[in-house]
Each structure stands twice: as C-alpha cells, then as structure tokens.
Length: 567
Image (cartoon, rainbow, N blue to C red; front, top):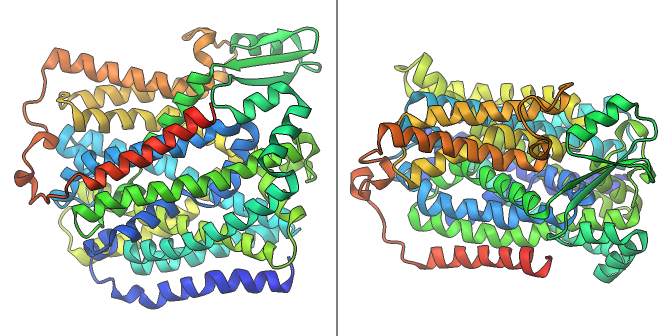
C-alpha cells in the first residue's frame, strides 16, 4: 500500500464517517435511535439491507467460501436471502410494523410468550456477534496480507475502525447507520466491480476459468461450476493412525486405499438445501434486517425495498463471490497460497489476489471497499443487538418502568460492549474456514428460531409449542455442533446423518415436528397475531400487487440462475 492508496481509503470513507458524527445530534429519543423515527424511504432501506448483508465478510469470507465450495454458495443470497426478505416484508414483519413494535423478538412474546422472546435475543446475540468477529478477522487478514503489516499493527487498525463505528452508532442510532450503510454500499459495489474485472482478465474470463479448473481435474471443475454436483472433500490419511481413520469413517467418510485418502461425499441436493436454509434464517431471524424494515416510512416503502435490495444483491454478490472461483483457478491447492502458514486458509484468497494483482490506486480503492463494509456492519449489528438487549431483556425483565432517556442511554452504551465483545470469537475463527464455523452456528442455533417465526406467522401453532420446539431443535443442534469432537459418534446418530450439510435441515425438521406434535396435543390457536385483521393491529395500507410481483420476479431470477444456468 502506497501513500496514494491510503489517501483513497481516507477520501472514500472519511467524509461518510464525518457526516455521521456531525448529523448524529438529530437523534433525540429512543424511537429515533431504534427506528429512525420511521422516516426511511424504500431506496435507503433497500441499500441498507444490502450493505448490512454484504459486509467485509462477503468480500473476504464469501470469496473463501466459493474458493472451497464453488457456485453453490450463490444460493445463500440468490434464493435463501431474497426468499427470506419476501416472506419477511409481505408477511412476518407486517404485524410488528402495524402494532408499532421495536424488535422482532417483541412479536414472539405476543405470539408464543416471554421464553420465546428471550431465546430469540440470546440466539441473535450469539450468532450476530460471530459475524462481528468475522469482520474483525477479515480486516486483520486484509491488512496483514495486503499491507504486509505485523500482527500488532494490523489489530490496532482493526480496533480503530471498530472504535469509529462505535462512536457514530452510539450517537446517531438506526437513521445514521442506514444512511451511512447506503453511502458505504456504493464504495463496496465500486470496489467489487473494479476488482472483478481485474481478476477476470488475469484468469482469462469465464472460459479461461472453466479451462483452468478442468485442466486441474474434471472433478474440480464439476464441483466448482455446477450447483448440481455432489460435494466431495478429500483428507490425506497418510499420517493418520488407525483410530483417527476409524473416526473419519464413523463420520461418513470412506477410506481410499489406493490414494491414501479419506473421501467424504455430500449429496448436491442436501448441500443446496442447507445453504438456502442458512439464507432464509439470515433474513428472517436477523433483527438487523427487520430493524431496517421497521424503520420504513410506510408499508409501500417497506415492501418495495426488498425487491430493490434483491436486484442489487444478485449482481453484486455474483461479482464478489466469483472472485473465489477465479482464485481457485489461480491457486488450485490451498497449500500453494503465498502467505504465512499461520494464516494459510481459503479465507486468505481475497487479500492475496488484492496484494498480487492490483497496482497503486486500485489497491487503495479495494481496501477502501473492505473498510466501508466493515464500518457498515460494525454499526448495523452494534445498533441492532443493543436494541434487542435494551428492549427485550433490560426493559422487559430488569428495569421496566424507567423513562425514555434512560433506555436511550442504555442502548447507546451497550453498543461498544457488543462490538468489542465479539473479539472473543477471533481465535476460533482464525483456526479454520470462517464460513464453515458460521454455517455450523446457523444450523445448530438459528434454524430452530427460523421455524418458530415461520410457523408462528403462517400457521395456528399452539402458544406453548415454541418453547418445546426450541428445546428440541436447539438441543439437537448442540449435539450436532459438538458431535464430531466425540470419541464415539455413533451413540445417537448414524454416520449418514453426521454430514455437516444435514445439520440445518435436520434441526428444521426436529423443531417443526416438536411444534406440530405439541399443537396436535394441545390444540390450535384460535387467533394468532398474524391472522388478526390489520385494523386490530393498526391501519393497513393498500400497497397493490406491484411490490410483490417485483419481489417474486427477482426471486425467480435467482432460482433461474442457480438451478438452470449453473446446474
């Protein structure tokens, strides 16, 4: 990184942060801080939805994901997240919006009781702070590899970014976060587009990509370029003892004596389903997304925002995630990545390509995009989780009768605790692929909550069924999360169900069955919140069919790309 690079980084990020700090004094009460006073237009909500979803983890971690797993990872965004946005905006969020709720956890108490509300908060804090930890780790890798800095210098800069994001989030709340998200998303998109064309030219375009992968092996080209191919992982068994080999076999692998490898095969349909569920869970459970929709100025703006966000998401994530495919063509073997062994993993592919393939000026633009993504998501998740903890735990259980200024102060001061508390995840994230750790957390803990939101909104599941379902689903998820570390993994599950891609779908099924059985025993609810007339919740607005039609068209495009073009 040269002086001109750092000037570009500061020029693209500095004015946005300065604007946020100067304008944050407009926030006067908790409604302003938590919901932006419900003044946000559809385009700001849409860009903020996109910017919150596509953070520096998508520029770095998702590149690592496609480097390791190929085009299947497009499905998280193209099908899962867009489908989740549609379900949220046209169904799940409406009772919350019409009744003036501040958080999606409030809805769960009205539908299922206090236990569901508190569980929702705890799960969201658990997995959203994982994302914050991933952001810090990706920034560290970018600074260490691209700039060539030592660990101490890189971590100091990461901490400074977190501090700046904390300041303007504490001061301005959702409105400033949404506005800065929108501005920073432009920097992210610009950096992604420029870098995509640089790397594509190096590889020889899409045809060069396919040719290079096929030259390495036909199996590699199939896995990387087709969503319909099975996921095959190979582990060198040369140095493994008999006990270690037997453990791999109990987890579903087969031992290839000829090549001295342990081969794990996961069906394509199961891998695709697991990724789509992860995307659905992100959009629906994640209050970072709900919070923006709840801040929309009316229902028409709320519904229009998701179609707009979906179109931006399809284009931008194609460019960002394709970088991992190009990286696999350039470095087919992770062991060939030219970085220190201590940080050599698939997550290093993005910063390696930035370091080696860009010149002065362009390097600064791309690093500016990574920094903009980090600022955006530090602020977004910090404000979201502080809202949940303040409204759904502190106000509900600890101090229910304090004045508005008190809750505003608590929400502000929880923000740095959340952002810097997430640094505790960093050692685990550095020890392996970050996307793998994230998907384990989602499959084990977030998918049960997804089921509760879906059944609570679209069925008459009994009020008591949520607690039963969450106990069953999270309990199974905990076992699945830890099972691979057990010496004997056959005690509860057969090896076919130990596939990591099976965790999410199985947890979904366990939770839904537990809720369904409870409802059969105790009876259906007669009038869940979702089924009440809109007038009972608050005045509904006639938004017409256009927002839904546009949203469905965007989802159809994602399905077509994922299951026709890339099949």
